[in-house]
Every structure is written in C-alpha cells, then in structure tokens.
View 1 (cartoon, protein in one colour):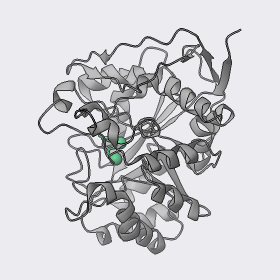
View 2 (cartoon, protein in one colour):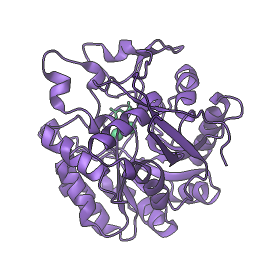
View 3 (tube, protein in one colour):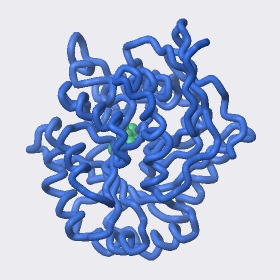
Length: 353
Ligand SMILES: NC(=O)N[C@@H](CC(=O)O)C(=O)O
Ligand SMILES: [Zn+2]
Ligand SMILES: [Zn+2]
C-alpha cells in the first residue's frame, strides 16, 4: 500500500488571485486543494474600500469552477487615507477579514502604500478595538538599506514600534524570510503570527543567482542565505502555532518575469501541497503538516478549522505537472522545486463541509 496522509483541508493565508483573465486561470488552481484563502488586495488600482472588496469577492466567486466550495477571505489595502469607519463596517458585515499594510514601493503594485505611518494610527486603533488583523509586508524601502537586510530592519524600525504603539493589534508578518523574523514572532506571547511561503522553504538566494539569473525564483521578500531557509524550515515544521502557510502564490505572465526588469513573484498554487509534503517528510515532520496547513491559520484568524479532509498519497512515480499554466494573459511558469514530487493530492475537492 502506498503511504497516505489525510489532513483537514488546507487554507492559504496569503494568496494573489489577480483579476480578469489571470483570475479566471488561477482561481481554479487554488480552489482544487484549498478551502479558503486570504486574498491580497494589490490590484491595479488597489482594493481600498469595503465596496471594492465586495465587488472583487464577487468576481473571484464568478471565476471558480461550478460547485466549488472555495471561500475567498477578502482584505483591504491600507493607505494613508483609509477611513476607519469603512474598515470596521466591512469587517462587521463579514466582507473583509484583514487589512494589508504595504510600505509604499516595497513590492508589486505597492505605490499607494504607506509612507507616513503616523497617518495610519486611527485605522490601526480601530482595528485593534474590533479585533481585525493587520497583515504586513515587512520590508523597509529605504534605498540605503541592502535588499537582503530590509526585513530585519523593518522589524526594528517599523514593526516593533507600531506594535508597541497599538497594544492589542493582531499582526501577521507575511512571507517571512529570515531567522530574525522567526525569532521576533517567537518573542511575542500573543497577537503576532507569521505566514511562511512554499518557495522560501525550498530556495535560498543561490537558486536565484548562481549559474545564471533565474527570474522565476525572484520574489519579494527576496530569498536569503541558506541559514535563513533552514530557520524557516525549523519554524514551519516545529508545530508552533504562530507559523502557518501563506503560499504568496503570485502569478505574473512569463513575459513580465523574463525581462530586463522582471516582476517579483513565484507561482506555487497548483502544487504547493506536494511540495510541502516533500519538505515536511524530509524534516521528519509529516505529523506536523496539518498544523501548518490547516490548523494554525484558522486559530490565528479565529475561524473554525475545515471539517472535510484531503488525502495525499506517496507514489513511486513522480507527479508530472505542466511547466506552465496557460492563461488569457499568456503562459505562467509554475515554481520548479528542483526535486521530484512523489506526494500528490489523491482526492479532488468535491464536497466541502
Ligand atoms: N511576493 C511577491 O514577490 N510578489 C507579490 C507581492 C508581495 O506579496 O509582496 C505580487 O503581487 O506579485
Ligand atoms: Zn508582500
Ligand atoms: Zn504576496
């Protein structure tokens, strides 16, 4: 009998679904294995009001396969002009589940993000009061700071002061890439969690730059040196409920990545679970995969864990995946983990309790 692993259906606590043709192509890729996802609001223009989040949610629902039980959990893009009353009303109405902070210029489509953090105080205070989590892209944008240091500097300069100034605000450090971030999350007894992506458990910065420049491994925050990758693997497989899966699956058409100035983002939604099963097996931690993919995230977001299950099986013959997903905006290359995928999801998502 092939080894199998049954998990509560996973959720993705950090996902880019885009819009239009790209949305139609990638939404089914997440809906196949995941029950819910926190949907990033960095569209062009960004999703900044409750009404825009509701309209975007409806476009996502329309892009799902018939009968899909996938639930998009919407977020708002925090700007210096965000109205606290709109945020709390959208949250109370069940339209949004979090607010996303992008330092202006830190990443893809972040031009409308925050420059002057003092201007966000009223919103952050309203969020703390209402229990609305703040999701943070944790990188400083100061050009003086080396790109490999931007996450660690963000913690000291921005995140820790922001948290001290707003007691009770629940914060998710998104897509952490350093041991500094993992240590910082561990230093907080409550109210602080972190998502870890699929790709940051697999690649370090050599994968991007050694032996040729590989644009499909370029994402933000950029992968760091090997010691940091090992720290992320230790955090993800530790069983510590402060760490949970956010794939940060971030599709860009190949033409936008294979360019003199390529976009940041790795596309991992279609095969995240086979990759994670490989990683957790290699760390002798398959028994902790369910916590990472299916239990710790709902606990942080104060939502019930999914009731239905998925089963992974380990086959001798590796999974064959298309190299690219064809979309109406052009092909999108899937993240190549660099090892054969023996684990695969056995049951298609049919009934979601
Ligand atoms: N992670 C990335 O490299 N890219 C994301 C933006 C983000 O999550 O920072 C994108 O929207 O393409
Ligand atoms: Zn980000
Ligand atoms: Zn992202």
